[in-house]
Image 1 (cartoon, rainbow, N blue to C red):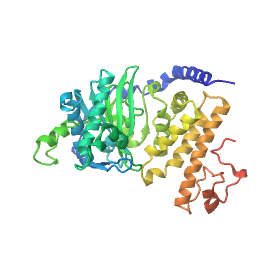
Image 2 (image 1 turned 135 degrees about the vertical axis):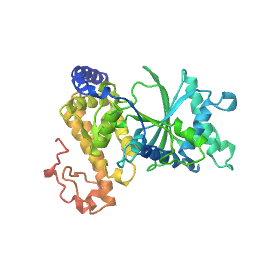
Image 3 (image 1 turned 90 degrees about the vertical axis):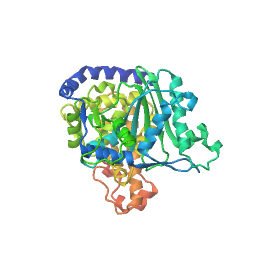
Image 4 (image 1 turned 120 degrees about the vertical axis):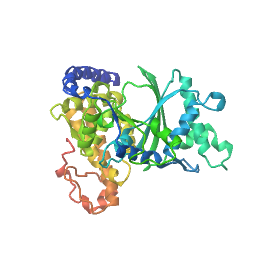
Length: 418
């Protein structure tokens, strides 16, 4: 019998073994450091950025709390003003260096191709030397939410505790190993974009792959709207600078346009990198270096099982990822393909688990994949079952669907290793 501690020790030993060969993967990507990491956005990119920041976003609340509708740039300006205001004025007294748009929304702005995004990620770089500063940041954000409540709202309902319970879906604080930042995610309703406010003093790893490494400085656009009397036009728009924290901005943009997967310093990627990698595969991205991607896959699998060693943790992480990163009908349709690809990567590239542990994780992914097929069968009874997976469960949805008539024990799918 092996304990959880034994399993972790084995995983860590494998990690260090893999990292000895990981340098070959990284060194082959050295070219990405030679270019300029900053770039000035074109008019078309600035126009798309302005459209994103001009969007009225709904912040859904729990229970009978009303949905708050606020223009994104006004939300950013309001939160920043609260952060910089003194404590005597109800602010946090925190110096904000700049505000940036990050993640899928930044990628949407930079590419001419359709680039859907599930969240709006905003980074406020600020000085947060102590835990008390993070508490003041949280109070400032909740204080600004209170100003967005309808005027007739009773004061007791607009208390910090009530607002946190109603409008905050996730709150994270990190202060260790050179990382000092906090995250407040606003919006409860599933199927709608959430607004993630990240307050960063220091963060060692700000991206996983080159295609999610873009950050766009918003200060000049916000100042433009404060000062300019005319709308943005082709001959009249602010100078906006974008950055790729991956390295070469134009190479990262090429990866985004060509749907290529690349990274650097993979030893810094946390366990969630495996899930992001398989999500990119499900969206038709492909490795920039196919000959070296197996090294990265083995590393990501090992890192995932270090961060989520127990089956219950793995289930919670997978279900949360499916819930938060596949929003809308088009994305929902990718869930089964995503789980199939994840199953294949875990099956082929996991080298750090005992056989029964590996089988348990694979069975978990199979069950989730089957659940997604069943859910789609209810919505689309005439759906054709994909050839790469045959449902073998005996739930009512499968039994009632003609699409699952071929299911039997003698045609076990490739997805199942048994």
